[in-house]
Image (tube, rainbow, N blue to C red):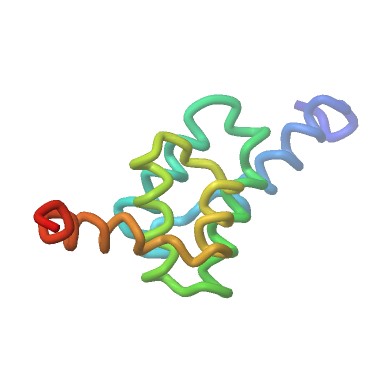
Length: 110
């Protein structure tokens, strides 16, 4: 491709951006977070790169443990999206499902 080719220049710029936007293996993502990201990138990956960036950015504010729990919950309810993961974290409900599972049998006997 020639550098003056607009399509070639666009493709080169896009490839450079994807190298910086796509999660790298050294990020040490846990299973649920990796699953959310894999599902986001499964269809229309180019359009969902910002959502992947957003999920990865939540690590800074909420930490790895809470993000992993929120991703696990989002996958469990069948909506692994940035909006869902962030909503779970903002509401602080990432551990509710685990608490209900652990205390579920004791409440059933009441």
